[in-house]
Image 1 (cartoon, rainbow, N blue to C red):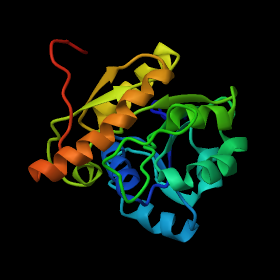
Image 2: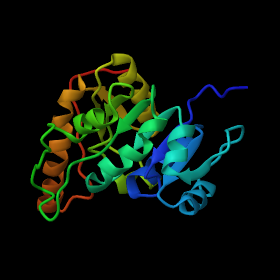
Image 3: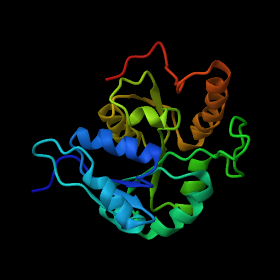
Length: 222
């Protein structure tokens, strides 16, 4: 019998953001397939994920195999690795929703906005994957290390995608990890959240904050 919640593949799932999302989504009853360059590393991490009673089993695999197994694919890799990894998983995400979390941070000046020629990392991802994948951008402005902790996170998630129904799916994922998803419009608007990440890094440094986030006021969501 098919589980009512989609299987979530998290590419780069052993990193800070990927493992944080995996832990919270697993606790919410989603089946997680962790992807990593090294399958054994992903398998070990998958065994440590929470498994509520009645939830489907989790597993780890190489990135390509994980992408093939996921119904929704979340890409949580550094900007420097994005192109290579997208090329590797491209044959396995045809027709799927791909959630890109990439921020184009270029060390050492990561607090300075440095956007790619395409306009944003998400637009670069859509161009590289082509029209057969539906790219939605999200989870840029949440402190990754807080997702790994059992704490409430005072942060909204801006969600960008050309199809409202795809943004709604990602809003449900945000809700499952304890965050409020806010529709931010089409994918081209993803430039705003990606640029804001560098601004938040600078704010964290200046105010010695432990992961400042954003909150959209004056709206009511479900």
